[in-house]
Image (cartoon, rainbow, N blue to C red):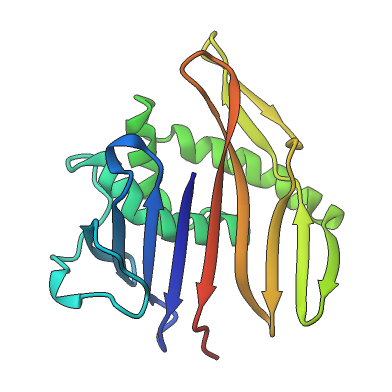
Amino acid sequence: MYDIYIKNTDDKEEYYSLYTNSYPDYEGYTFVSHFKKDKCQYYETQDPVDLNSIDTNKFGDYTKASLDGDTIVNSYIYQGKTNYRELSTLRVDAYDFETLKVYSELDNKPADFRLNIVNKLQKIDEKKMNEVSLKKEKDIKILEYNMALWRKLESGEVEIKEKSDYKCEMKIKNGYLISLEHYTPYNSDDGDMVYGISKMEFVDFVK
């Protein structure tokens, strides 16, 4: 399970994010990222940090996701961007192609494996968007929907389901996305199908 917090700036191509993950090697760490256009600078820390206490002096050089670097770290620092752009818009952006290749490398897949999977899923999801349910809680609109899911079978083939067993949720306030919760399937070590939960909270949106 991981949590992402995103803070916007006056420039729609620039924002900050805090990312935590329960992956054993990185549990207790926070990845602090600064995105500008399609590049990222980041640092990791075990000290308490929030979006108002980011130490900009700790940032390194701008980087992009790379198969030559630490693939796990590169995936983590780009989680905020790829999840935000893919899950909130149901589409693959050119910005995210390098990151999808990094994810594929983590699973020892061909470089275009995840890109092809995501493209297939999004075509299904686009057709299902009319099935989204809408409800309101005071001034917050809540959209609930099911997204297509995939898993890799022992044969090496990919099984795609048009609906998951869980509802994803999107919250909108004053026309802005403020929260996104998404369930992601993956195969555990014993081969069972399990779900990871990604939660994103967005703060300080500007017009």
